[in-house]
Image (cartoon, rainbow, N blue to C red):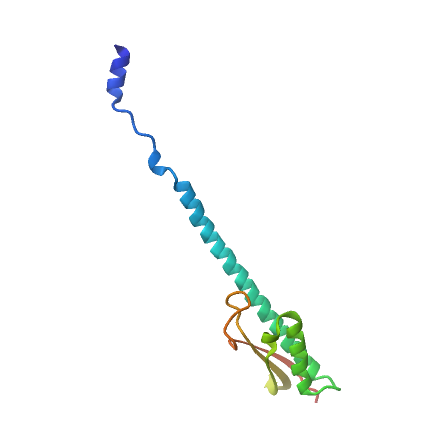
Length: 139
């Protein structure tokens, strides 16, 4: 009799928490997708910075090469293209120009490189990334 009273007082048996069943799988997929997108975005940003730094180095190295005593300013273009093609691709070295400019009152040789901005891998719109390199001209 005591057992019967205990069952009656306890009320109906509560259902199992089956409403939460499968939520861990959905959470895992959503968080995994979000982390993958963040990782790929950081990887792409790293690639953009690598391309930009490589182009800046090629432009400044080309400018220094063009100001050597036995070289002409046109040699700076060839040197910059050679460095770009050796490290990136020929598409990045197709638009290289050279000219004289004044920076801080000093005449300099300026090498300008216009290249694609890598948006998806190394693919991107042409001419959107522009870098400049300078070297002092001998007096």
